[in-house]
Length: 306
Image (cartoon, rainbow, N blue to C red; front, side, top):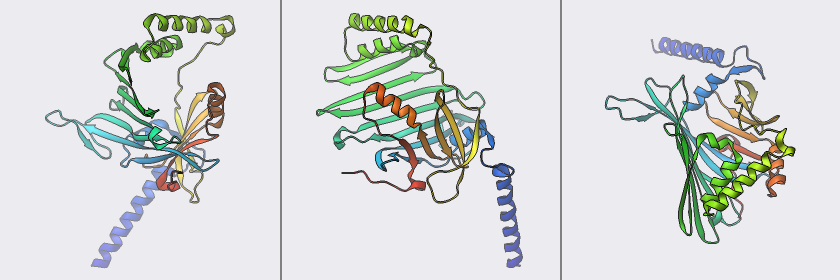
């Protein structure tokens, strides 16, 4: 009788495994298109956090690290949110967190620390409800803290920075985030520059952008999100691991490539080398030649150089 039960259980397991394979990959070759909504739902409902290391792959140098954590909250009878794992009903909101973010400096005490939080409404609307960004760094033994906070119920974003002379705060209307001159003025006010001087600098930037040289080159701050993902193999590993690849266009043909497994876990994020080179030349910064975020569970863990 026990053998019969074992055979039944094995048959059931084999059938369910086959059905799962059919749902995920049947008839889908490498490069085949996949509905981006389905992949996005997997990412939001992923059960585990992703520990990502920021790596210069050309030199195999560790540049930093972060933890990516999706969570789901649902309604309860007393209207209190409860964090749960996996797909649920009566979803109140989705949350995406980047925590323990760290970019390494020459001196460990000067590392840049960062956190990011994004809250989203349930499907099918999937609209953002709040965004928080925090940056922190010590320089010349002085600690600097910067934060940005926006709520969908408001029409502005609040920026704060803690300097030696105290905290500075400025609010910027959401519609002004696409206007460089407004951001320059807000940034100068945040740094403690007098309002009159900040307004003058903002006007100079506006006049420059409206000059003849740039009048025929309108700035476009709109990010065109992809409508589909593609079946691909995870690069840089020995095993043959099928994943979803999401190509996010930044500027023209500059694509940020995001690799996600079938459980929605982030495995790899590639920043285009052309974009890094452009930023490096424009800002006169000595940036790494390549920047890749890699899941240490699949690529191994690099140690920080001393």
